[in-house]
Length: 363
Image (cartoon, rainbow, N blue to C red; front, side):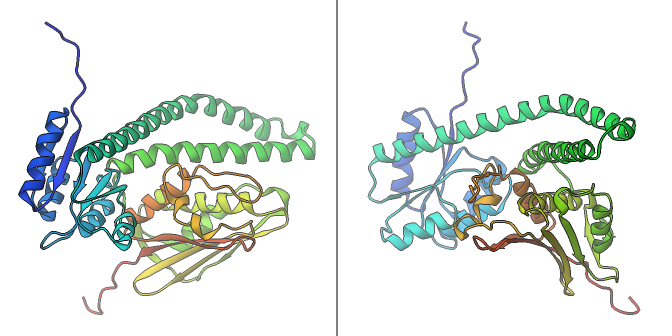
């Protein structure tokens, strides 16, 4: 008897309202060792994916009640389903149809009548890419856990230098220690972001909401920020009146830390980072504006993607993990996040948070 564990067959959801297409794909995929799951409509596809997320989805476009584009949009809007690769299979062959498919989150597009060998090759490719991404994520997760212990030692040594040996250090050396702490804090934030991105992506992080004053939260963060090297400054423009939001204060504080850290990293010596808070009855809006090199428009969406990298004019790169965390945290609160930027004109990162509805007088 062979007790060796066999890898589970990839699970493929087939979504098409034409029985002949479904039957052909189901038989062919099963013959190649896959586990096909056919459904005849978009609504059933969403229900099936939520109940048991597949490894890949083959999706028709022209279906009654809910077309393939709408199905894909809903899949990509749900945290536990957004990473599933979607291959469109459609009789629509115009360029505009293919562009729309990619715009809503599809990874590939096959036109009908299709050749199964082509479908099979594309299925293989995207399943392989997804496996590689999972291996990368698992390896990253292990490395991050291993980094925690040496980082704790580093913070301990910095504490000794700052609080017990400060009188024996020159002014220049004290500034070097401050820079070392800022870098260590940035590394700790990155580690926490990697772990939390993983938890949020798996739906394992629950918000601990409380009503708090957003302006006060930002002021408290700035008050605990270490002295900034290079004569950089941070200016806050926020209303003195209380600005109530219902949030997980720890997560939103870290969103602010990430955006502020990025702004300071790319602002040159002597520059100013501006933080502003505005509000309407429905939402609060926070902006963080730097004096850095700016970001080309084609990268505005990519920088919020996991492991997205952007090379600026000084050849510096960012992992994007911090901004991925910010995006997931803000969207978990029902808000939105984005960036307004041009090359050579700095960047303004912004996010919104919904405000609690005011109770009518006498309620």
